[in-house]
Structures are given as structure tokens and as C-alpha cells.
Image (tube, rainbow, N blue to C red; front, side):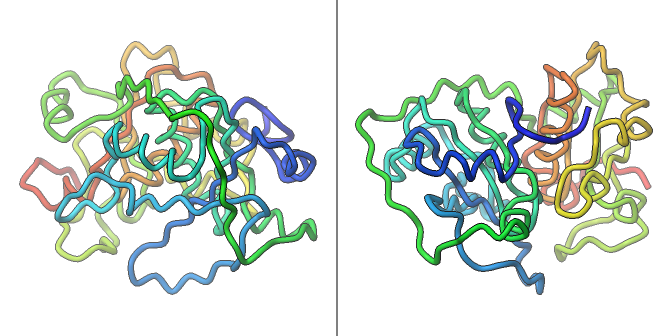
Length: 277
């Protein structure tokens, strides 16, 4: 199975271009860059898009900058942005598909039924010669947004510590060098290593030419996982962004019990929790 065309969770730029005038489509730019990053990303918005700031909406925390918001905070933000429960939300970013899945996961955690990721993001849009704008769109809403959260897809450090005795399936989506403790963490003050028992599943290896690679090419990465899901799969990364990308991929594979460790290594690496190197 390849990530092409339109599916329940993934759409391509041609699909979106044909639907720009559909008032039911709500387009969100979820670009996020590591603080201090020198990465250059394209400017501008897909017509009709609004910027969704994952740090601004987050639950306040002294060190973890984009923790999942409360249902009340999410509802307030949706009402300000003019997004209703029935809208088909399209998430993209200006890097490729680096951070858009974080938006997808956030919407899913609050029970939004129709939410997809734009394969290739703004780079793919520009590669087709499609127009962009330098202004966000303002939407109006007729009905207040209402969350229907289960939040079963979120894991805390305390829950993982308790689960370690049961040999959980923990998938670490950071680059291999950081997983092995050989490369330094980009965030100061964090230990090197991984959560004990973790498996490596680098999210960057799932992307080529700004798009998701075919699922069949990921076979060697997922073969160590129990896809019968006798145990939940817990995804983790540096700060809870890339972990949502792998959660998105595993959902495409049919997984039903995926849980994102929202604090990820930003929390674990700063604590005295056990590590493995």
C-alpha cells in the first residue's frame, strides 16, 4: 500500500487543489521548527489556510512547550479559528510532513472525525506550481465546537514507568544516533539514551522527497512489532512531534491501540527515570 491519492487520513495536493472552494474544508498550517533551528522553509500559505501554533495552544509547562491542550483550550481555539465539528480538517506544514501529523493526532485526541494530512505539505504544493498567499484566512462559525475526547492515545511518564514491568512495545522515532546514545540531544541538559526496551523507528526514514514512502518499504521497520496489538504501541521522540508521525503511519497500517508519550525525551531525559544505552 502506498501513500498516494486520497484516503481517509492522507490526501495529495491535486485532491486539495480541486476542493479549495469547498467551505467544509478547513486547512491548517502546522509548521513547527526546533528553537534555534537554521532550517529554511518556504514562506506563504495555501489559499484558505490558517496557522495552528502547537506551542501557543499547549497546556502551559515550564519546560515542555507543546503538551496536549485541555479540551476547553482546544474548543476555545477552534471557535476563534471558525472550525466546526463537521469540517474536514487538512493539516500540512511548510517542511514536508514533518509536523502536520502532530495536528492530526491532536484533533483525533479530541474526537474530530474528519482530519487528514496533506502528503508533501507546502513543498509538494509549490512543486505543482499552485498559487500561495501571504495572508491567513479568517473563517466564521455558526456552531460552537464541542470536544469528544477519550485521550486514551496519550501516555504519561508515570504510566510508562509502571508499564515497563510488562515489557511494553515502545517505539522511539528519533534518529538512530540519538536512540543509541551516540549523538548528542539537540536540547541542552538532557541525558543520552533511550527508554528501556525501546525499538528504533526513525521518523525521518519514513519520508523521501517530502512525502511518505510506501508502507511496503517500511516492512523491515515494523516486523519486530506485534501488529496483532496484544500490547499497545507507545511512540516517543524528542518532544512529542515525530512520535505523532509514526502514530499516523501505524494507523495507516490498521493499528487501533497507539499511544503517544507526549513528554517524550524532553521529559524522560531530564529526569532520573531509567535509561538504556
